[in-house]
Image 1 (cartoon, rainbow, N blue to C red):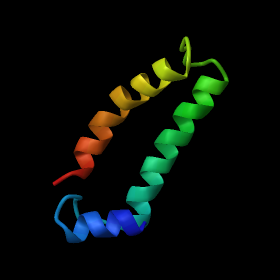
Image 2 (image 1 turned 90 degrees about the vertical axis):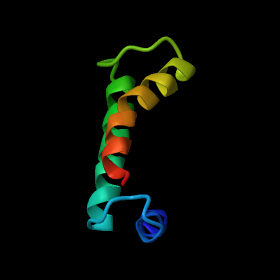
Image 3 (image 1 turned 30 degrees about the horizontal axis):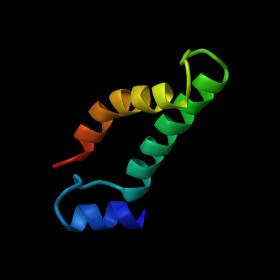
Length: 66
């Protein structure tokens, strides 16, 4: 939460409840990992999973930025 607060103070992250912003990031990441582990999202290896995660995470990240 410290990084979110710092980002908000620096004007890089939009205003809002730090807890809610952190929770949305955590839920997204946890859900992605869970789906990969359960093979609901199929990837060839960890590098592909990371690249795909980055691709999917980008719109969420853009929505948090000012």
